[in-house]
Length: 212
Image (cartoon, rainbow, N blue to C red; front, side, top):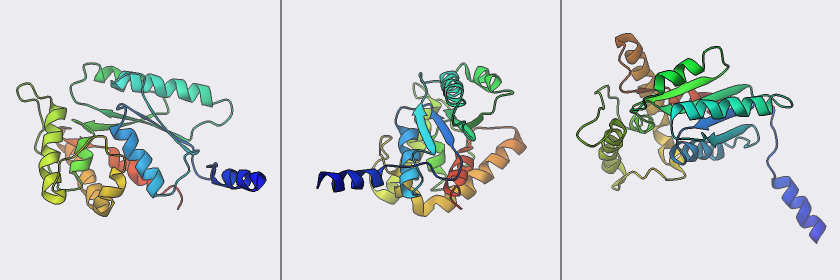
């Protein structure tokens, strides 16, 4: 009986698949990590192929430092094919330092202006109205408030940052989000005004097509 049970457990262990090895380093401890873990589960991707971790601090520079260390540690046996650093612009004073750090490095910054929640907002509507600080509320706080207004219209309750299955919850609106985010990024580049915009759609589209 125990041998049969052990074999069953062995079959359930995740294994490396034939597609890319990917590292995703997130600025947030929960929001971004929960979203991408939800994506992996929903799309039935291998957690061996896709490693998701948080930076050692809560700013873009720490995210990049963490990514560079992981790349160095991994390169001797199974180097990553792709490395993504998921960061918010928000009001980080060292943001330009982070951008400079990735020059000549095989890393891709997945930036959201002002925060990751703008990607969620793209599931509900297209908007290029700048999201900025007001009083004591940061631009990131106001992005959450803007999202919350749309969220309550659809779901009848408030958005919660630490929800673990957000990819699944929002999946039926994914094509809308991909279109809105791409349109917003194109406008941001054309108008030379990044607020608001995001590159999260680039990473999401890449991940969901890994097995194709």
